[in-house]
Image 1 (cartoon, one colour):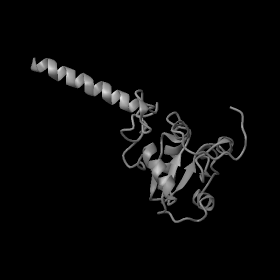
Image 2: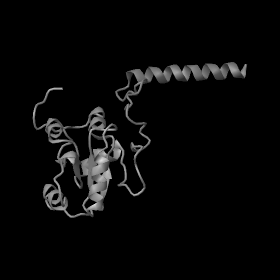
Image 3: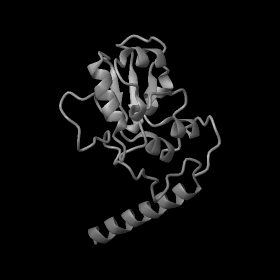
Image 4: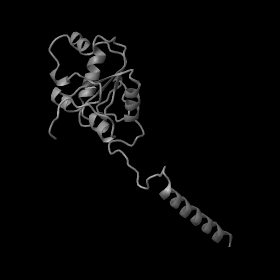
Length: 172
């Protein structure tokens, strides 16, 4: 008899909870809208990561840092991809097209002479792209000390529905 009352109470509570959720203005979706790139448990880290690499950050950290305006985002993709869409306010240092020789003057000029300990977050296309990792390693070798890598990159930023900056209208 006690078990039957317990089951009835649980069923009534469940039906009432579902019913209230359906009419609530702060409704919780029954089927969540989850990102396909990561579990949300932390940053995406490439299999080629090594000890001493700049730290990897999650989409949540990237978004928070972006909203604080105390960081410069660096897009490591080529200029064509950069102008078609990037994280707002980002600068472009296309890793595959870096000039020969001493890179410090080139990178310093792109970054507007910001000090080497300023916070920079480097990204590229996403998980399939390791340009951000290579640029991070290169900048670290040049003496930049406050670097982070957002390995989810452009693709995760867009899939998360965050603001984008487009400097040209591009197909695809």
